[in-house]
Length: 168
Image (cartoon, rainbow, N blue to C red; front, side, top):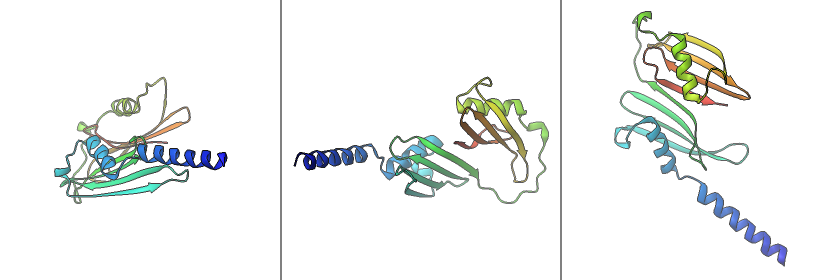
């Protein structure tokens, strides 16, 4: 009888902890919007999905559009930590030539990525910095490794704005 009561109390306590610590879809949406610096009024469409990964951890996939940009976020369901973020400027086909005079130097791009990862050059090694000019805007792809952690960034080649950031 004691085992049944103890097991029941443990189950109730565990459920209470999980549900108390899990963000709602609206809270996860608000985390993503705040990070993007976008108000809900500026959003034209938004979709929030609750998902569970292989170890039963809840996260939210949030995709939203403004008049000029598409945003995608993955937000950890318990902590509200942003797991993945990306944005893309919504432009049509462009035939413009990319001018190298406005491009950031690779050393500037490296500093932007290291700062965003919270690392110094002595704490990490830069594995790749590649300029992509196939789309309408120049974008640097940056890969950094620090110990077991891998970071990947897409950084606008002229403005230095981080378009995509992920940590594995």
